[in-house]
Amino acid sequence: MTSPGPVRAEHGSLADAVGARLKSEIATGRFAHVDVLPGERELCAMLNVSRTTLRRAIDCLVEEGALSRHHGAGTFVRRGTPHIDQPLSRLTSFTEDMRLRGLKAGSVEIQRGLFLPTPEETMMLGVRPHDQVFRFDRLRLADAVPMAIERAVVPTAFIGDGSQVSNSLYSALAARGWRPVRALQRLRAVIVAPEEAKLLELPRRAAALEIHRIAYIGDGRCVEYTRSIYRSDLYDFVAELSLGDSKGLP
Ligand code: 16G
Image (cartoon, rainbow, N blue to C red):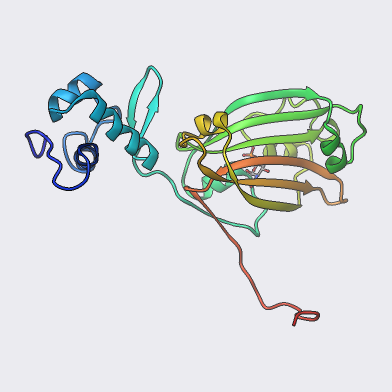
């Protein structure tokens, strides 16, 4: 270690001091070039602390986002977590957004297939209750960091059975001539559900942004209804405001 010897808590708890030491080792010390931390036993011996203290320190760093735990695979160091400023005025896809920022878009599929629409989806998409819709649920990643969970629903009139959809839903729609050209989007703050927290690598009951997007093609038909949960620690949605027609305003 860069500063050998046992960790001492000058102020605050011993776990805080262990956390600070781990952080400095990750930034410029012994762990500056590693992706996975050594096992608990080795770390306890290095830092001369108990397993309980080490676990408490690691829990805090996981909450802060400096480390992430993958069951059975170890404790990973997270460097350069992307932070996204996302303009609210552009109708782009996740894949395009990440490419524009030099990040690699990835996905983990949660569900894909044809299903009957819910009453809400029937209304949003303008389909009949017995028309099947293509449902496509994914965890979206940027440089392997989980950014959002997206649950898209598309009428089969635009996407068939969805078998042609690979990495990008919008590319698949564009290939069939149905790229959305207009969308309405609603954002609100929510507390993540336990299974969402796990997928997004967030602490339990963390805050996140829920976004509903309803997208249309040129003739006004609705092509997509997507409900997403975005990590609010990694995303800022930015809107440009201008002084428009102020008629009716006080
Ligand atoms: C964006 C859209 C989502 C759309 C997806 C397509 C928001 C909040 N959501 O993430 O509605 O389905 O892009 O991305 O912006 P893809 O073409 O990479 O699959």
